[in-house]
Structures are given as C-alpha cells and as structure tokens.
Amino acid sequence: MSTEDASMPEFLADKKQLAEGETFGFTCHPGVPCFNSCCADVNIILTPIDVLHLARRLDMNTREFLETHTSNPITKDLQLPIIMLRMKDEENKPCPFVGEQGCTVYEDRQWACRMYPLGMAIPPASAGKEPEPVFFVFEDDHCKGRHEVDAKEWTAESWRDDQGIEERESLEAGFRDLVSHPWFIGGRTLDPKRMHMFYTACYDLDTFRAFVFESSFLEKFDIEPETLEELKINDEALLRFAFRWLRFAMFAEPTMKVREGVVDRSKT
Image 1: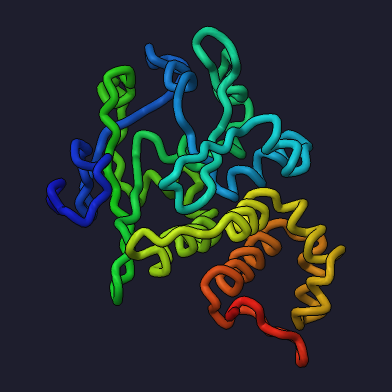
Image 2: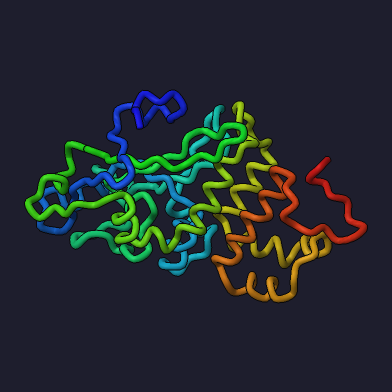
C-alpha cells in the first residue's frame, strides 16, 4: 500500500506501512539501553477498555481514575471526546505507572503501549466501504529495540497476539466501529449533549451503570432480565451494552428495543 494514498490520515505520510505478512524486528527488556525512556513525555490516547482495566487495577472507580490520571483536550474540530493519559508533573514528565523495573501495571497496560512499536490506523469512513485497519512501524530514534542482536522478527498479527491484543479485540473493534461510523463522513460532529453521552458511556462506566439502573432508563427500554443481571456485575458486558446503546442514541440504529408507548426520541 502506498504511503501516498490520499485516503489515509496525514500523520501516516512518513510511516512505514506493513504489507500483510511483512515482518519487523523488535525486542524490549531491561537490557536494552533505552529501557523505560519511551515512558515519559508522551501523548497516549486511552481507549474505553484501557480506562476500565486501569481503573480496576488501581482499585478505583472510573470517574476517580479519569479525574486523577487523564486529561480531556478540547479543540473546535473535535468530533468525539479524546482521553489522554496524564503524565506526572515532574521534570521529564514520566508516566505515572512506570517504575525502575518497568511498567507497574503491565498486565493491564494500555493499548498504545501494547502495540508499540506497531501502530494502527483506521482510514476515514467512506460511503459503502468498510474501513480496514492499516498497520505501520514507528521507527523512533530513541528506540534501540529494533537494532538489538536478540531482536525477534514479528508480523503485525504475531505481535498483536503476543501482546494480548487479540484477547481484547472484540471490545476494541466495537469501539472502533463507533468512532469510524459512516455518520461522521463529511466532518459531522456531535452536539454537546451527545458528546457528554459518548464520554460517559465509553469511559465513565461506573457512572453509566448508575444511569442504567438508577434513572428512568429501564422505564424506556425493554432489556432482557438475564442481560440486566449480567450488566450489574460484568464490566465488559456493560461496555458492550454501552456501545450498543450509543449506536441507538447517536446514529438512530435499531440496536435497542423501546418499550411500547414510549416515544423514541433518537429520531426526533
């Protein structure tokens, strides 16, 4: 695939894209000279699954985690909320989760750190065409892991499997389907109410659970009893439900069953 493909995001212009089955070399361990150097002063976007897993790892509710460890940059061109991991307010701005021996939350580390040095992008949505992920390799000067003698050869598929990314794929894919939805073709943006709705349902899952069970939500929507029981205790099931509800609320898709006699305001 050509890096001059006009359908690709601009930031990919100078990145090496991987063809299917193409390999790259990489290793990372305390013996590599740059170990931990990539864990400071870096912009890391968190996915909903990242926020959920890190909050639970730290024994925090999602709102507490968001207020303590993230920032929410706002720009006039923003289509959807962006959640960034907040670096420590120290000279070299280290990640709050890095220690001398490496990542202190390694088993629950965020998607971007699992992927590195592999990157992935979803081309802009286009009518009648399902966007396919594109993989590329970061070739940062500070990273020595590509040149170590023990660097192993990886494909995009084998690297993602080794890093536990495939285990999270169904949830990550559900989120990607939202943010790459054809509704956004032409630069359409959500109004402030729907932006807040998206933020809460995707990232502040504990608040979303309260919304489902402590508001008039269940008076409006007909949810299977067995599903409701699972939503009370299963975070990942609740996140999948949140994606389903957002498709109804934002894009007017028939993913929710409105109770008889209730006005469907997603179409008004």
